[in-house]
Length: 372
Image (cartoon, rainbow, N blue to C red; front, side):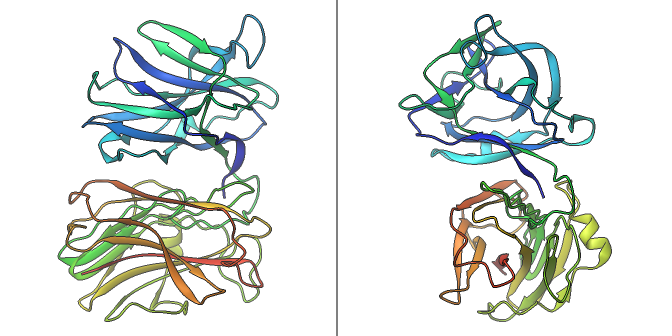
């Protein structure tokens, strides 16, 4: 499961607008590599009016004239580029969204070397644009913010960009790989079919990485993609995962495994956010994917689900939930009732204290579902 390289999550004092190459098209923040392999990053974003097109994240080498964290700016060509993120799925309020680095872009960030993490969006205008939040009240990060205006980089002192940057786990991960914190990708239709691509990752700072994709229709069908580390064992330990799915007349109130266990191939299919999904169809009522994950000593996590459905969420919302072992109740931490059919949307939540959600073996349980 991905672990944290660096982050800053301060006040939402200011949003740096990104529009096009005639104004700001990039915003970045300097950081120091730790020898890890690049996995994904997150920015706190919002939209203004109705922007379209894709945003991407980039990694550059860093240079400065005075000192790192004072006047750091990108240097040279792009070292790594993330997969695209559809900005039309953003809301008008700031929330963290994830950008994944795949294939040859999963570079090793040399330990002790300075870099700049950059967010790029150049398909907007003065009205239809996106904003990346930062803290200009009490910024404390050792790096500094910078922006690319028309043709050149400019550093900004007194403001830190809000971001998280993650690397691959160095060994079998003790963090879940449910497609909630990386992203949930759901695809639903009248016969409810939810396709889930979860990949949960837990670390000392929020990091459950799910990616669920649901495809639901009146007779439900959920498909999910989860990223496993070690298959279930009698006594859960680092890397434990237990993914199940099923269709139900009524929504289960407990955490008993669902009807159908993921096969070995299905664990492989959902081992990363790669557009491959696991399907569950139903003619009953609810289509559900449930994910049990070992989280060890970590006491906080982030659940992020990138979903798609072919059954309008306005008619039947898609829910992301986590089970509270203290109250014995499922808690909704994410929902969507506005997305269009066959269009990506994101469900995201930070769980800042896992005390009530871990059992004695430090396992948490999450699920994504839609009613058909």
